[in-house]
Image (tube, rainbow, N blue to C red):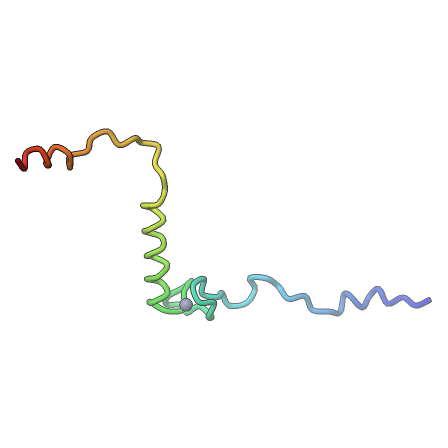
Length: 76
Ligand SMILES: [Zn+2]
């Protein structure tokens, strides 16, 4: 019989989020200037995704007017 329960206490647990953040785009270490990204490039990539996400979100408002159709008739 041995009491080795204290062994688990000695092991240093890796803390999540304790270290430097990683770029969400390429997983490289983030740079303070461009955080949470590693570079302006990755920031632009994320911005592009963000903008696309906005337009991709379905709205509850139903499109009522379609001005394109009226313009087509006047073109005659
Ligand atoms: Zn990056």
